[in-house]
Amino acid sequence: MNPRSEDYRSINDSELIEAMFAGCGYNSLELNESIEAERDVLGLTRKGATVIKPESAAIQGLIDAIAVLPNEQRAAYDQAVLTAPRLVEMETPSDKYLRACEYDFWAAAKKLCAYWQYRLEIFGSRYNLPMDLSGEGALIEEEVDLFKRGVAFVGPVDGFGRAVFTFERENFEADWIDPGDVKLKVIFYM
Image (cartoon, rainbow, N blue to C red):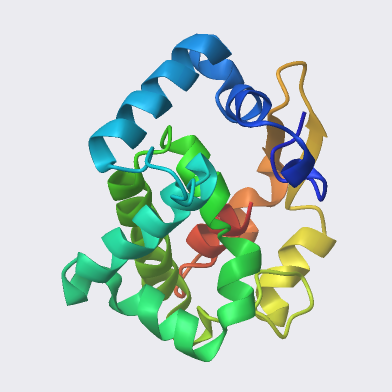
């Protein structure tokens, strides 16, 4: 069951927790006991108290963690949110960072902000443009041309669900003499 589906409000807490933490090795009973203990410690079990869903609590934790990171660590992220909020939401979804960091919102906050800092360092003033092959996004037309000519491409997914990145060796040296970090931009895109 996908905890992000439209009808997730119709499932109970056990099913939601099971769906969110299916890969961690704990069963839903153990996870529910842990959540209930946390709710008790936080004073959330009293009558009439609002029950906080684990996912929304983690996202709020991520937002709070980003807010207290040092300015230099989050500056590129903050600027991207100001200039292109939908792009930030689409290309760096909070829930994916949380899952990748096993719902450690501090680690997710650092990784999310680091992503935008690396993107700024690699793409410069175009960092807050879409990462696409239009030639009008973060990659300029000359960089997009490498993909069009097949110098670099993403192949089919392997048996473990991983994408296979391929670079044509014949064209590699000739096309990749790189005064403007073209290689780095192409690898970042892939």
